Image (cartoon, rainbow, N blue to C red; front, top):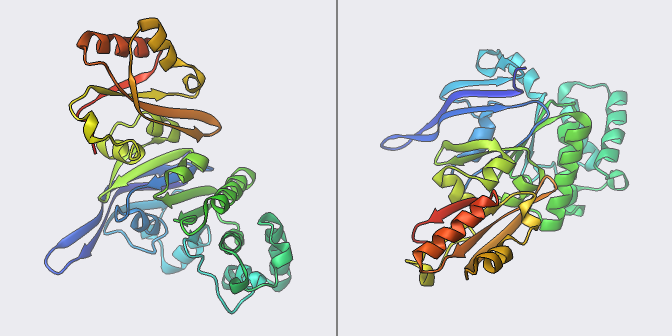
Length: 336
């Protein structure tokens, strides 16, 4: 089946004073129907430019973008406007109309689409129930919390029954508890209505909480693409490792010591592997860092261990851990 979003060899350049600047270079990406797809990267990596190319708010310099099998570049302006009704967008700062109340903001996209007033009012009532804002229907944006404003934005995005919702840092301005409530709402919408959701973020917890697949972007290029479980537990590219393991940097005291990273999957996270290593092999190891995360209801984690100076003992420790089907990676100069 054709992916909901298919991007091939996409470039986006901007003219600088002295040279052409590549914001995106040779992006190839398939996003499947009903997926929740995360795109993560550091500030300036090209995330927002990429998501704006998906609905042609930014026209690519080269390459193709297909939505539901249709090439956006081949469309007339009228056809593109119609297709954009299938591709809704949610922004970091909500982009609500301050002079309109909640109902008026939700109605806005339906007015543009030319919906009849009676149908519009019925749809607004339905959407208020979905985002749990019925009691605040007549309030104005200035009277709402950040989470409530984003719920209005989500309702507005859903108004024309889109096939895709693009979220550009949609939770970055929210506190952690509100972020989780918005993510839960998006996940419920995905499951109930089958809408494909693309989330641009620099927050690891957002991707871990909601996404099924993830792409890591760095300096305008894709560094790694795969399932969240695979990429977050066994990253292959240098960029992916830097982003995923960014909290696990070492210190000067560990420089020159032999250190390893041990990755635990959804089953081994609950087993006392390190305790067993110490007791069974009579090998003392130093835990330099440990972290666990929840991915789709399963616990995953990684740990940095400093091995004994004795080379043979260190080799025995690695052999033991690998015999337990754990991913073990030796680290060179484990130091920030």
